[in-house]
Image 1: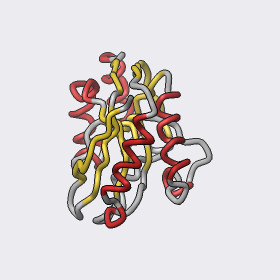
Image 2: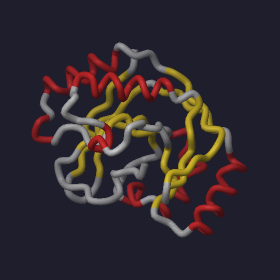
Image 3: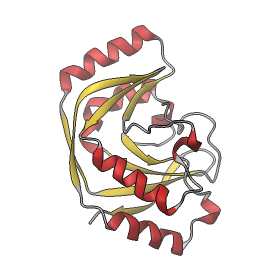
Image 4: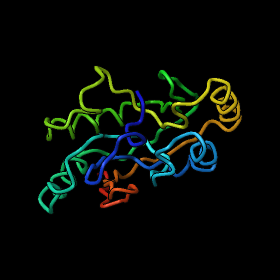
Length: 178
């Protein structure tokens, strides 16, 4: 499941993510080189929902509704202790991933017109993308390096709304969990 933030994004697209600043020291150099979304302004993260509503549809009412939906969920801890792969993608896998899945399900239940990744995948696997579209030898080197720095333990206490301005992803709002 490639991180759609990297390819084919347009001005007005939006997404909901959980930033994982605890992972930045480990993944930043690799992401800057191997994940185009990093160069477009997206920090280390686990996607909650992409694509979300077009930015033109996101007003105070939508933001209030996002806050209400997310506020019903308690903050939680996630531990990233191993890497995973999708075709062409290397990622850190959160354990447990239940908290991330519940956030995605709650947002999709409220906005069913915005299925995760446009409905491309039956099972949306929470993940922190480190590399995509790279040569296998590069990915293997990155994975070996990452494994020496794991685990990363993160406290998940908010979800951020990012909007693409045509050039970069920018944070538009942040919503605290309960």
